[in-house]
Length: 249
Image (cartoon, rainbow, N blue to C red; front, side, top):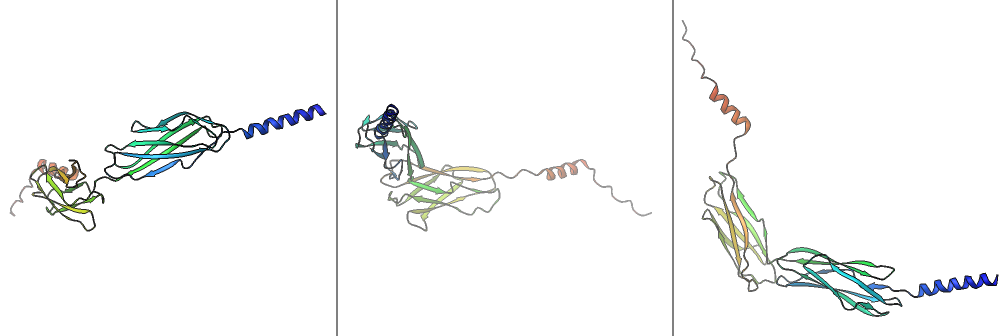
């Protein structure tokens, strides 16, 4: 009995020691939202952690989801009570809109050996257009149609220069109904023939380094005759003209 009891106490002691000797990384946040300025080249996220266990944690690997993002940790080993961070750097390039990048971290933390860190960057372009294409049906009245250009509020754009790739369209720029907004009025010279043009738009922002934007204007081709119309035309061409009635005898 005494032997069994001693064994039982020994097992409990080992279990208690195993439970007390643990490694655990606690993350301050695993997702970061960023809004870089329109002329920023990079978006950088900091994922902070702390080892709240009582044994060291070792990083096995840190991998970003794509080549446009890099990630690095301050330490290969995190001692008990030690804090640190993983830095994820997203190279923006010419990307705009919402960009989501991830970093997968592998450690020897028995409670959570793998974790995915998420960087979300919302990149506002220098200019946004609505719509990007204006068009007229063949034969439609050639009235002006409007493209609204909304400028980034930090860009300090005072005016836009707009030119058409063909003389078939003219473009005029006026202030919009809201701050940092412009109205581009596009008008065709003729809508009786199909034509397509690229509108080149250049802002005067001091932050702009020669970048130009584009929209499009088009007069649609005339609609092809419907099947029923073609059938009627063919019938008229193949049916002889009606014979005149004979005069009464």
